[in-house]
Every structure is written in C-alpha cells, then in structure tokens.
Image 1: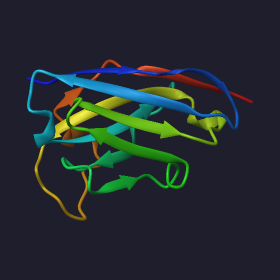
Image 2: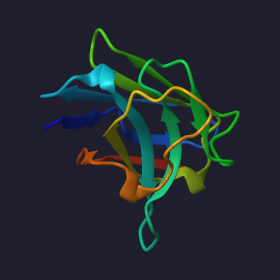
Image 3: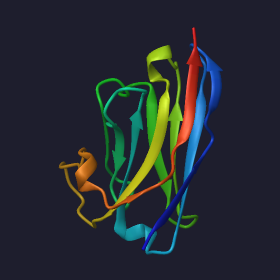
Image 4: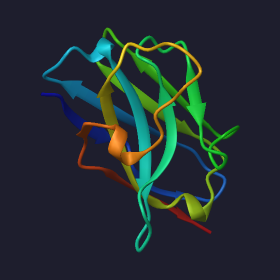
Length: 128
C-alpha cells in the first residue's frame, strides 16, 4: 500500500510559478510510475504529466508541455511538478498518482483508472 501526500499548492498571479511535491511512503517507490492530474470545479479529473519509474521518460498533456516539468528523486521518494508561466485556467486541485510499473518506453499511462494510488490533492489558484 502506497500513501501519497502532496504539498506546495497556493495562490499565485498569472505568469508566476509554483513547485508541487508529492512524498510517497509504504511501498517501493522506485517500482512505480508516477503522474500528476488536476481537477477544476465541475470538470473531470485530467492528466497533466507522467514520469517513468526511473525518471528517464516523461510525458505531458498539451496544456502542460513547455511550461511544466515533472521530476522524481527515488532516494527521497518524491515526485515534483515545476509549473511556470501559470495561467488562470491552470487553477485546480492537483493530485499525485502512482501505479506499479517498471516499464521504460514510449507508452505512458494517462487515464485516471490506470493509477492505483492517489493523494488527497493540493489546491492551486492562479489569479488574473
């Protein structure tokens, strides 16, 4: 059983930056693919970014590509999401997710149902 705890959310002006962190416990972190999703009020949870178990491969949604960077530190059991050039439409609750996978290639898991473990979320609000 893997427990995930997100942190780093907050209020920021448009054009600003935030760094989200997710700390994992209770499992072998390095054997899990990790991802960030977000959910705005009244909308479905959507994929933002994913990273393979080794950190060697990453994948982004179209909206995140070029502005967000996902990274992980397997020694510290953490995965991060650096968000730059934030826009009001980035406002949402951001969730960290994990699934057991040591696959390393060009396929990434981007659907909610493909992830087993979820954090409680951290609120990101971008003001215009």
